[in-house]
Length: 177
Ligand code: GDP
Image (cartoon, rainbow, N blue to C red; front, side):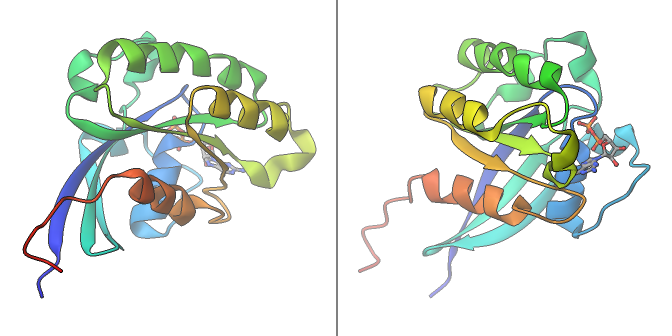
């Protein structure tokens, strides 16, 4: 029985430097580059993972540095199945701007978009500025997935995308028992 391949667009949001490109690089290539080029996000990278009876082919869009303009073109969000909003656990500012990204999504994103909040750089816990509890409560208040990640140490990056996969309703297929 051939598994259906579903293409799922995922867009990454969050301030410059929080580790968006590093998370994509870790997920897609299982690699961490200390001098990652911001141009990596010129278009999108893909990775396919199994989910139940389906294959989810993630088309992951990085902002390519456009987030410095503080608002992204609505086209960036169009057709997205999920959005990952990333902040840096060592930068309170990056957490405070989460709300701005959530507002952007509400205004420009699809209504049924799955939202995940990722607190990245959790390998730097000794210089943490954002308490996990506070971030988790905020995520719960907007019904978003919450997870802390480390792109550097490969912590919870796969898990982040698995949790997104699980929230995507399966396609109905009456021919399959
Ligand atoms: P972006 O601007 O959001 O795409 O962020 P980048 O992926 O370019 O990462 C910004 C900086 O943070 C780079 O110097 C990365 O090496 C570093 N970085 C990214 N993820 C992590 C992480 O999980 N832990 C640590 N310690 N550094 C990270």
